[in-house]
Image (cartoon, rainbow, N blue to C red):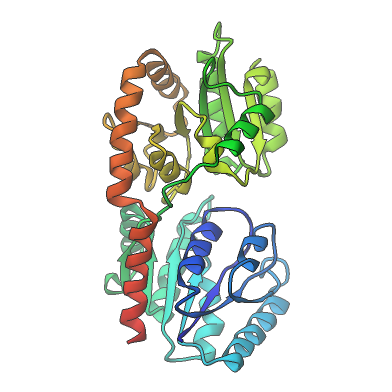
Length: 366
């Protein structure tokens, strides 16, 4: 049995971790798997799998300690069983100790997108490091692929594999429990929903402004925001200031997100920076119409005018207009929903992602 090592720069509850967890779950019966990552809230589901976990200190907290611990963890994994392939997620710098220890070992590096004011610098460094040390590089959407090529990535190393999510099998008792917990009633309410980290990059402040415009004189309209993050208190205060606190539900992190999402009439993703959104793919898998911004991989997920609407980022007027359009035209919501499910089945299923990833592994291992 071949030995795969996954290295992650953090274990929170975001898309990077969820994608890596999907790979672990699929491949644990066919490969010996080791995981090296700092501890975090996203660790428990990994520990439920058949793998060996080794913690190292996050480099941004203590670089030298984290580097020493990562090197020790890689050596320990090699001692348990010779490593056949290492898959690094999200942080290009983590390839450095791997390549120093193993000059010829296959390294797969997945770029999950970079955010913030230093994003361009991060892309340039990722391209530099990957050109030097990665055997193959996975981009999670075509937009990311094009960005990497623009910043100098060797295209011969690049593979484009869309993030994929499973078709949900809903637990109806959990759906009922969540509806009761958050006072949601899809039979009498229209529920607009999103799922995102509560950070500036997700553009939620603009969603609150747009919702405030359309929520006037609509007592049965609800906005559900699922997620946690640094801006939680600021966004809650904004909802108070806008007069929509009573109709806005901040659910926090929800383990049973598919069940919560099943209550939505349609989905909104107002991101300012995004690669390939797992939440958007999950909405499509549940046959939900979607509104998203013309950012990153969102333009590949939402087909404008067919599965939903695309709007410019930060454009509150356009967002409010498209929300109102879907509120006024339930037949259009149904049409978008059907088309979105079809698009999901063509491009964003978990099986498709897993098959393409294992094909890549097989080529490198053979």
